[in-house]
Image 1 (cartoon, one colour):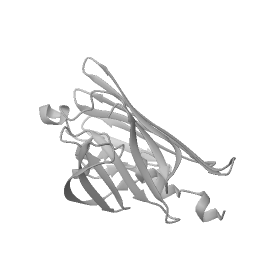
Image 2 (tube, one colour):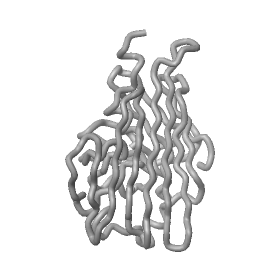
Image 3 (cartoon, rainbow, N blue to C red):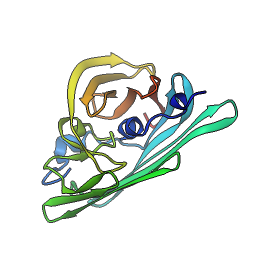
Length: 222
């Protein structure tokens, strides 16, 4: 197996993982899009299972903690040739994003992001960016919040500000039997993502640097 087939590719992995700032709030419509249960996806690479990606929600009064976690391992027979771990959390209060914290180990290479609200601005630092103030409406690219499609996205791995163009391809029936609305994103990277009518994240697909395809399919909670 060549090096190109061992690694998912750092830029692609973070985008696949890879909800605002300023006065961005859920509002009643956005609140209705929040998943009622935790999300869990099985992740495959060109048909081979490589790990899981989960998103959990902890609510207490007017606070919401969102935790994302991904663990990937690419194997050549019984030998692990590539390993990827990612952890991120977002704290929201009164429907406003307060903090983002992310850590990633990409086969031994580490990245981080930290964001903190001060007044009406969200200050971001990361391993691949100079410190900056996020533009109004920017969201962490953690995918659970469909509103990310309409805003700049903060990379939850390394803090980079990502800009995408999106196309709405309409509803499609997924392999799970659920009907999801299909969106394609291009610009910083290319990927496809599906949300159901309630705004719940249902599936994701993206090509990576070695030409393989990463697919997310629901494990539970969907």
